[in-house]
Image 1 (cartoon, rainbow, N blue to C red):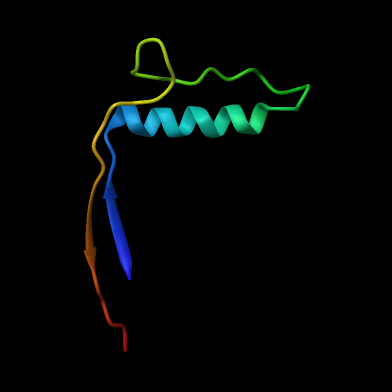
Image 2: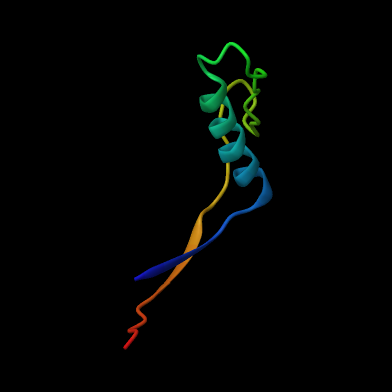
Length: 59
């Protein structure tokens, strides 16, 4: 089964910044990473995730 996701730019940037922050955590030589957010007063992003699923049989 294959899932194809369509992400908007703010959601992608949020996920990327969270991954960068996790990678920098505990590493004394890493640059601190700020998490990009679209929510005022908190962390996160307000978005919708849409996907399409298809079953493909490969012979």
